[in-house]
Length: 408
Image (tube, rainbow, N blue to C red):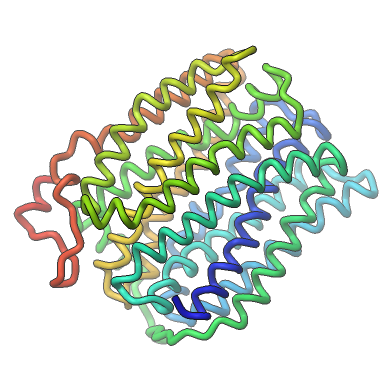
């Protein structure tokens, strides 16, 4: 891989590490400092992802019209500046839930633009044949961030308090911005007017991309409920400390890292479709295992179960991510990624609100079962649709033929 790719990956490492610190720290600020309840936590989780719902599609237009590197750098700076306001307000005893919501919304808008540009920037740095390895490397970085970020975040919360821990994320975004600014890549933005709806038409007109979008939307909706249930069940219900909470979440990173290291080999051996199918099959019983998490020895079921889930989920993500990057024309790549991000991540804030409302009327343990069984249901289409197993990137541009695709 080139030096440009190494800088790109290093920047992603800093960004991902800081992000996973904040994913522990921000809800703990609300829970431990501002005494938030289930509904408030649900609204905060929704605010953290509402940017994809509001700006996911316009972000794709910008990414296809303009150079992607300046968008990446600007989004990092925006996120860093907004996060710094949290510890400053806390130092003056002026922090409120309203400010947390506002910061979460601003960060989510920056993330919406960053993620679409980041995905679309990768094919400008590596060749089509290198995409599975490139995606696998990014998933390795993300898994390392999951492995170390939450544990470090929990430790910072316990030692420095939750608001001060968020400084780590702000610093990571600034380092990411500086590194990305030095990446050299040949970009060919359209520069002219492009249709916002063209990306959606491309996704909905492609049977397998459409399926990926639908399944992703269902999965992220359930993830919105997970954002609510995870701190409530582990910290409030089972009494796990802030540091222990971070370490338990980090357990998923071990599996994710292994999955990222294996992904390109598994895809080369079995193909994109069978990898996605097999990963979905394995996730079904694993989510049921996590549902039995409880006091005593059963507390270990959460990190063990999530570790195995992340192992196969990362291989699934590499397979579907490299597939869609390979088959999409460059001129549409930003809007294709934005459309899928809009469908997938745009449903997460809705799940957060539903999770918060459910948390007010059911027990936390019941909410955990709802989350686990919902995740099982969300992955079933990849198991039941025959066309998934035959999905592959072809030498003629990677499109599935019409007869095969119509069976999706």
